[in-house]
Length: 289
Ligand SMILES: Nc1ncnc2c1ncn2[C@@H]1O[C@H](COP(=O)(O)OP(=O)(O)OP(=O)(O)O)[C@@H](O)[C@H]1O
Ligand SMILES: [Mg+2]
Image 1 (cartoon, rainbow, N blue to C red):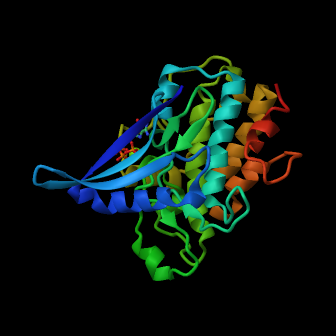
Image 2 (cartoon, protein in one colour):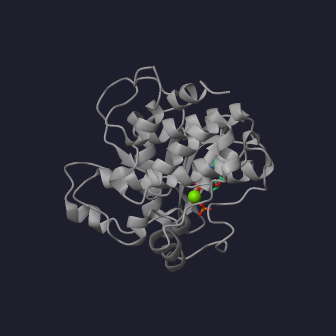
Image 3 (tube, helix red, strand yellow):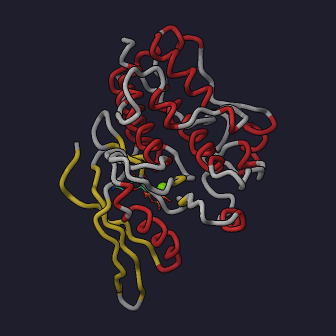
């Protein structure tokens, strides 16, 4: 359920940079989209002698996707809509254009994971937590991008990030990293859908192999050297729509960043509709039942 109340995210003094970045990114009206957390305002406040920083946004009482998945089993329709909503949000973030067709600066989220996605209702979600998001401004230099660092959450990090071998000359690289992380989240959503037959309790990607907060070294062994990815059991592929989704997921977490689909392409895949439509994944998957 979506309420009219607001959420206040309070950043202590030491997280000023994260507040500044998140509020600047979210305040850009070009970013407005149904799958991006709605921004209201950002304020500097005094709490006693300490300064703190507030970010005021829409509040989503259903909480984050990870908690939602651990408590709920999804129907195929729930999955179609949630996955479609996530993909359309990432595609919009990465796009050079707003939904109205005016030019915008593409943005890389750089920390896509199920706790940075909020549920608007049972079938729609929004991306949140833009603390380390990066504006892919073509006027910035390679050094600017290099200085932005190796960031994100190790569990969801693409192999090239774990290896520190990102092609900083090409801004598409940052989008390719997001697509890898998005694929892990799509797998997480798929794993809780009753279209796959027996549904196990919710597990984060690589949940059976690593501890709660795996370090980069451990993830490097699994993802980079072992080329490991979350398991897609053959029982999932019996359902035609799920088969299609799993093919998409597999292409999105390809070891070679350039071989990955773009978020825009995922949104458009197999669709007969035009690129201006937001819920294309939803419509393409709805060809299956
Ligand atoms: N607008 C909101 N409505 C409802 N819940 C929210 C909202 N924003 C954040 N949350 C909850 O707070 C959690 C943390 O939010 P967020 O990711 O923005 O902050 P964070 O500083 O990254 O915190 P963390 O380090 O825990 O990830 C989310 O996973 C979600 O459960
Ligand atoms: Mg977060």
